[in-house]
Length: 52
Image (cartoon, rainbow, N blue to C red; front, top):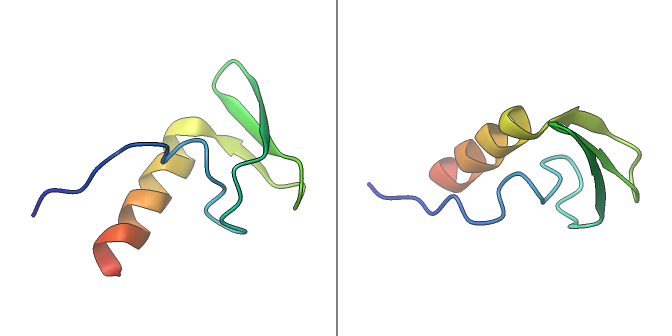
């Protein structure tokens, strides 16, 4: 199975919106206020894509 990694770190895995501010590897999502490491967020979004 091949899954695209495109925009996985930019889209919040909690609220699915692409409205963020990045400081180093940390993203803060402006709509929901959630903050996390970009790699962690990307991994969670990839998992969501795999699980469907």
